[in-house]
Image (cartoon, rainbow over all chains, first blue to last red; front, side):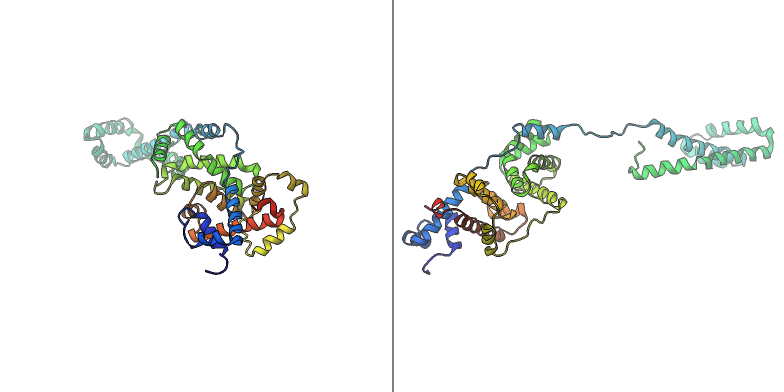
Length: 178
Length: 190
């Protein structure tokens, strides 16, 4: 060993003095006044640094934090918006209705009835109202039917902006309608 | 992780307010030690509260592979780093040469009256720790006051254990040299 211990050796001994009581460093410190002085300075320093620091938090800090953590979320809460639901349902219903009526006057009642019967499990249940509707308004003729169909198309396109708005809102809210 | 912490975590995750309060009481000293070494005093309470709110919010994601104290300490350290980043404070501007430190002690602006106020050795040492680079002060506090090991401090401060050890040794030497230079040597020598 050199004449004196290195600073690192002294600090290592300081941190693990209990396990190293009898080792070479300990023996050197017993005999070397200079190294022992440095060691005692470190020991004093470590003792002072280890003294608890008074915390300057408010007395009820824990209660305050707990209250804040468990407080109900503040800020705007999303209320169910009935008008938004209505805005979504109405254009869809109008679109389906207009397509069906247009299809009827275009002579596609058989086609629609067949298609819808798959959903409704009742061919007659669908065809009968459509046939009676045609009988009731058949006197109006094909031209009136076309005008009515055009009106329905206008209604569909008129509702298109609402449909687009609702669809875009659904995308931004992860497909949640409300 | 010890049983006590596991029970605390379970109770908090079950929605127990008293459990969370116990957790805060248990770890507020650790959080304060980190925060008080890294940010100005005026921000201590708010930042400590912010740390515990983050702990509450993220507790369900805690893996329980590390100690709860280390995890909370890391949240505290990162919160302080974020705060300092927002304030554009350069944190780890290492003082590489110890001579620089000694020079800075020689040109210390504290008045004799201020020095006189630090009447006992403990107060003088705390004053000097505060004047150390932030990471040295934080390591000193975590090692000596929280009895943490190098690897635990390393986890909190995202430093290798070897670096923690060398910083600790350097911090203590710096502190000793500053005290010896600044105060009458008889005051701190035995």
